[in-house]
Amino acid sequence: MPKLHQVNASKVLFQYVDIPFNDFLFLASNAEKFSLFCTVVKYPDGSVVPLEKLVDVLPKLKSVELYNNCLSCISTETVKELLKAPNFKRIDNIRFLGLPDTFDIDTFFIFIKKNKHVKISLSFCHEISDAYKNCIGKIFDEIIAEKTHEYLMPYIDCQRLDYMKNHILREKYYAVNRLSKNIDFV
Image 1 (cartoon, rainbow, N blue to C red):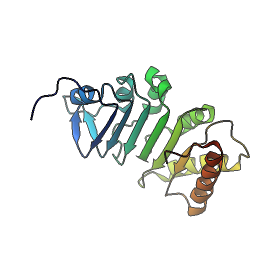
Image 2: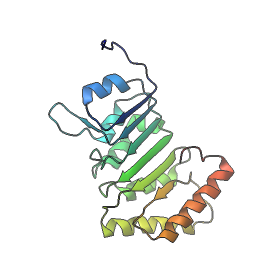
Image 3: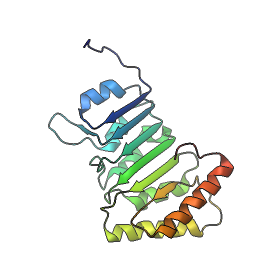
Image 4: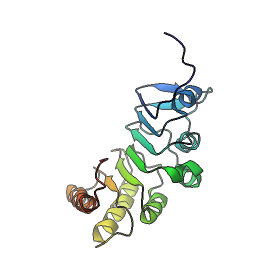
């Protein structure tokens, strides 16, 4: 196979691989969208590259998607660090599926309530703690109780919550976004 000298891909998807950080940088450096599906990006010493670092090194990034990774790239500091990252301010689509309870949902919900342009889709893994599930439940309750939203309503799913809460939030999401035509990513 010939060697690559330059990659100008605007969309990159990595599936079922552990990819060295330098290879990730080479392949995704021009990406506007990157998706990781059951994939881990690792430093040369074998440690996992945090999500905020992946976002920080991609200056053209507009969309980030993580799917069922057990999300080892997410720590308790990820949300705080993402919100500080200059490149994060340019993102217009976030899709995280299978989030662990290390994801700081309280801080991210503060961001959500100020958000006017980023399309957000969050889904939580089944292994979250009861305390974390209760925290998500309070967020669901708050969103459901609001008559109108001053923010772009996110899509949030947590199978550990009862079916009705998920159903009500999903219906509200679709009703709100159907009106604003922001339904193209869920």
